[in-house]
Length: 350
Image 1: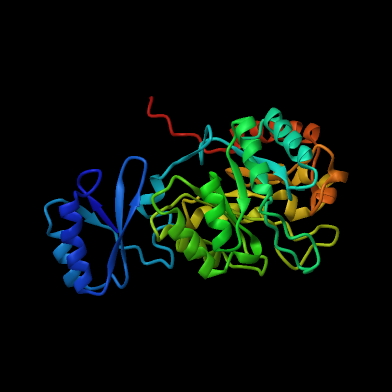
Image 2: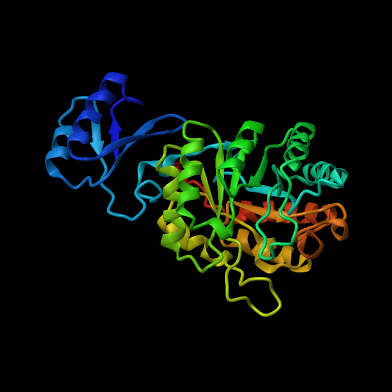
């Protein structure tokens, strides 16, 4: 990873470095941060001749060589200082709350619009809404592209960014063209490396973020972070890791809650962790406790299913969506807890 002396390389400097690494069958991928751009060497960077030639350039500060399966997402990389905003929240500094319906019902759009207004009133920062839905049963409702306009209408009415899941190239393009600010990669596609590459290419150079859920198939921590690396390697490091419960299930819950992995992730990566307690436990009555547990373990945010009338929802909403009243109380308590557990800066005063 090349760190220039100035905030970024000039076009001529970038061309010179690119020519050098090309000789060694590598390439350069700029990673644009809010203040500084760093330059990842993609390929085998162990050749000392290549490293020496680059380090000898007067405009290069240093090269960081991180021996890790995920060089960009590793907490020792220069991206450890990367911060970005979603709406009015700076990831890692304030508790991000994502809330909304599992699935948008195109036949009853008023429920989603009412839910969007209600979750904003409850204190959420981002609206979730499923346009396309992966289903185990091929005859279950798979979503409807027409719901994308309902989602964006909710964004316009509330002023809040939105997140929706994408599962193929067509979904990615439609969502980005519509103005979706956060793309979700669901648990079933978390290790779909072809899709991860497509998303990475599509958001390169954009301010778009990705909410990456942990694989439903017991993905290890390294596999989880490496999946994020696939996205970041194309130039956009705005990736959020989202534990959402794993298998085998714990009796009484939909999955086995995995919020306790948050501190383990933070030992390996700088990426913000936003936990999904709704899919972890699968029943609305358990969601508030699971949400507070996630914050207690150090989560940077929560992704919660909510509905103004859960019994009228489709998808998972009837079972696991909380009402706006419950959501409001949950957010108040979660933010109060976050202030207690969030690491405080060390004072320099004597």
